[in-house]
Amino acid sequence: MATVSIPACTSALLLDIEGTTTPITFVKDILFPYIREHLEDYLSTHWEEDECKQDVHLLKKQMEEDMKQHRACPVHAVDQTVHTDEEKAIREVMDNVLWQMASDRKSTALKQLQGHMWRAAYSAGRIKGEIYPDVVPSIKRWRGKGLKVFIYSSGSVEAQKLLFGYSVEGDVLDLFDGHFDTSIGAKVDSKSYERIAERIGCQPEEITFLTDVTREAKAAEDVGVNVALVVRPGNMELTDEERAHYTLITSFNQLELTGRA
Image (cartoon, rainbow, N blue to C red):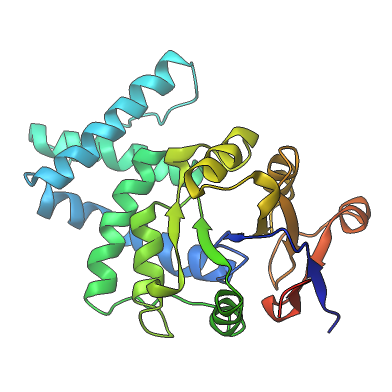
């Protein structure tokens, strides 16, 4: 396995989750199906609680924004089994959440509700966060060389902390210096990486970003962030041009920092 050198100026590593630290199958085959299967029960049980009300409020604001932007929205079919106003409201929220998931939307409103649902599942032991076996030892090695390590994922910060706090490796949250989600900006928007650098307190050139998504890699690269594309089983196939352009790794073990003891 060839080692890959990261510039000596690197002071912080920024890690994607899905397809980078964690198998894509965990998200697609475990986390997302859990939402679809338990959404109605969760909303019905927690509908009158403040946290759920805030989640629903954010989702409704997102719906209004989508309508203003003339984005496609779910069509509400007439359901004879729905009678009360509460049932109708719950069904409307369900339709929107399931539509957003089917459309692979990354809205903050959706991610917040999902995070709250996953919290209940993790804390009850129904789900454990999956992490590739090379991740924890590598992060410990990087931190031992004085690097800071941050997470940047489209999943909410809360969902990120649940995955690493209730992982198959136990609670590994102390390996990370901070977490970022789409509240700082979309992962395909270059400005997001400038904001992250500012928040961390370094220049973009001092960050190395690990992701499996080329659009994210390009956005980061455009503002001077160092990038390595992570090639894992099940990740999107790369074109020959992408393979030639980007630094590729198949394991975090390959990453070596030049000029550091």
